[in-house]
Length: 166
Image 1 (cartoon, one colour):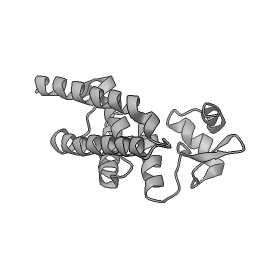
Image 2: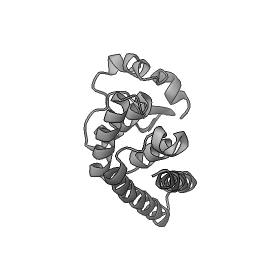
Image 3: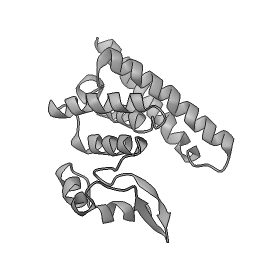
Image 4: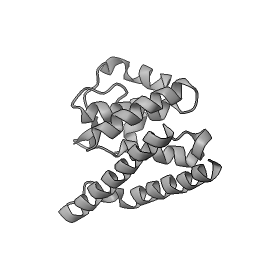
């Protein structure tokens, strides 16, 4: 099992590295670059689905901190695979409850999944676009409580967060 976990860690971190290298193409003006990004994230999403079926959520205890974060990134970017995002969300919730994963990443994945389902987000982590030079979040369930909810899971206040995008 230790060998499997080590190989899995290498695989997950490699997938995250490829994701980081090609993420600039997600919103490219070149349709071929966008397609390459979508194919990469779909392949990664498919593989994460197989990993979750075999191991459950890849926690830091199983694969190490870097690979666990890589699994979260892959789930986060599986935007056209709601089944994968929902499964990751379910398994990650269990891992957070057991103290084996972080509530901050779970909050980001929850918002991403809600937005992909066409619903309002909770924590204001997903940005819809930019208007007059300022990032605009996707609609939130309780906009007046966003900073309180963010603080509860270790996310900086919304204004500080969006300042990074300006």
